[in-house]
Length: 204
Ligand code: AR6
Image (cartoon, rainbow, N blue to C red; front, side, top):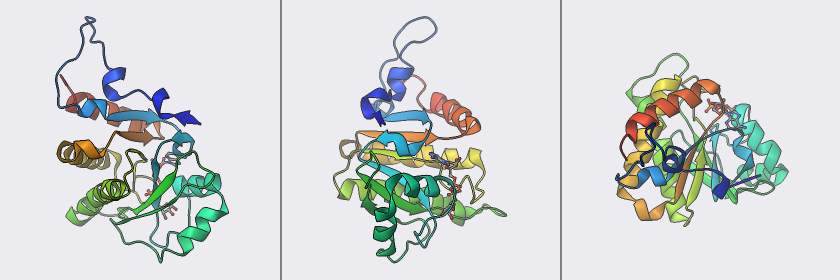
């Protein structure tokens, strides 16, 4: 298991410039976000997010990993939820996971087409998850790259939507969140997020 204090914030990880000087200023958002590459089921946070399907009854990808690590009680609780619409989110216990809760959200299927509907739905996944976090007084959360696996949303625009939606939410709800971890699994997503976050938090 990986406790939160072993995962540096974006600011901690990028503290030193090449000339050794400290990055200063900013709205404090880089103190509240992290980029972490690895298995989301290992993270000891208030909630991990599942990129689920609308039945909420498990599948492949990160959904499979989460159900496997959480145990069959998660499946039983999911069965009682009557599914979840695209862009919405539902919460369950974490059972055998180190995370206390799982927030299940259903991303848009984008295999053949990414239009405004798919973009809006993906943004809603992040927004509704963060709202559900706040409603339940949860403060630390880890997101996978929703929709970018089996659902086929292109990685670059998906990262843009994830980062901008989360940044915007933190800007308006700073007191409601302590840490958002972008938990990437693939090397390609790691580089995409690193580049975008470097740009986004430049000088902050
Ligand atoms: N930890 C973190 N990220 C992971 C892990 C893991 N253990 N395993 C995979 N990923 P996907 P989707 C990454 O396909 O595209 C399921 O069948 C993966 O590399 O899991 O939203 C559901 O039931 C990718 O970057 O989710 C739905 O039917 C990201 O997680 C459907 O797939 C998301 O890929 C949802 O598809």
